[in-house]
Length: 579
Image (tube, rainbow, N blue to C red; front, side, top):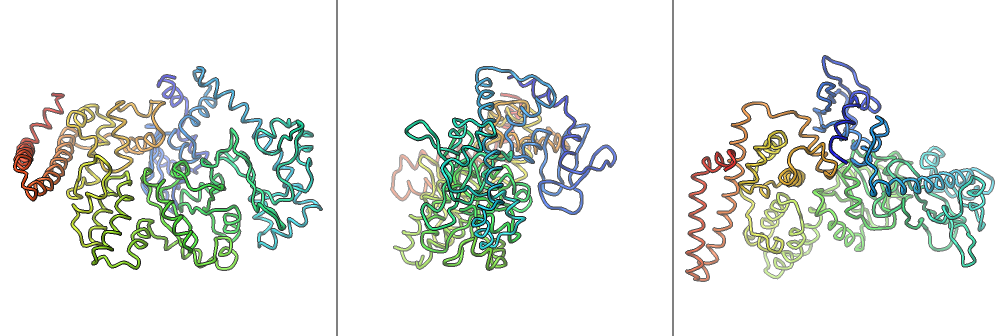
């Protein structure tokens, strides 16, 4: 597929019409204004520019083109939005072998979605029938209202081996399809029987709202308490979160709270606390976090207050380290779970969530608990516990801040902690002279509109000097592919969204040549400062070890950096000229 298809589709779309499907817009002059769908507000700060075909919220900073809007508001990938718009505008997409395979898979998936919808109809009808009485009593005993039961489409799988199977057949769903999505099981004789029997049923939906699986809870004694559908072409546990399809708009405004089970989510919603999702019998994964990041970076994890819960908190940090998200943490009172608190003390629950703290705060507190950092052995233990975790943090700016904090609490030098909290092969860089946000932001904005800025950053090897995670990823892509980023169908969705938000601000206002020279000079100057700090640490070590040859070499290297910094404006001018 060539990039012209993207522009062709854009040319056939009216961004005002598309956004009006989700936001009530009022015309004021050349622009249209409304309440932002991405955060709660009372005064309209969300603007759509029909002429430039972009949107911008002056409240939360979101912005972009028609593709980025639909990606964010629906939680879809660029590829999914592209296909949706292609069908809407009549633009033909290339049907190569990969796309043909996807088309075939989409047809197969549609059959699974149909089976899921028919099964849901059966389960909800059965719950409302005479034989669903025990299940209704169970749900009533759990404090669920009729409105909540309808909202979550909770149903009941009756006793018997072929009740659902026969219903599916009566609706034209083949047993093979039902087996493919886990509703029935094939026996040794080639026949089929129902997977779920005598259980309250919770439908699991994808982001589009399609039923892709079920979770069933037994209502009497017996094990296992819960059964989930097996994984299928439409259901991967590590890529789905229960209730995200329903809660995504609230999550965009208020952030996400992640719990463990269906009943936790349902009970909290029943008590008026929305914006909650649950994992599906697996630990939270990077895929889950990337899914949530489509809607928010404000993620709160909930853990039990016992030792197992605190160990789970430590394990939960790992998948976040590569995502640029720092989650908050709620530690529950002993012997309480979210379902209990929803029914007995929802106000305490709200307080705990409102006062949730960064997971790093908890990690530090847990490591320091019961230890005296003035004692060498305790100091060493804390450093060995926390430094390796800090080293795995991918965001350099966050890592530097953590190093500083740990150094202060341990009473150690920043360079000492930095040596322990670095990844293999990484140079020690002290957290001094960090790039200011506006330098990175302005330079990236210039790069998106001016190839000369990309050229200068590339010549001066400044790509690694961008410390903000989303900015660094965008810069890396610009250096490799150029700035036609919104027309590049291969561009990753996260990078595309960042670029769209910056492009929506328009070209840099003011003297572009001066801004480019000033910002490149500042970034290069900060790079020289960090390199000199690194060398100074190495010089001190060489001096202590009396290695004169090494010491002389490092001192010469430092002097070369000092001379380079004096000539920084000449260096930048030559880079901007492509020399």
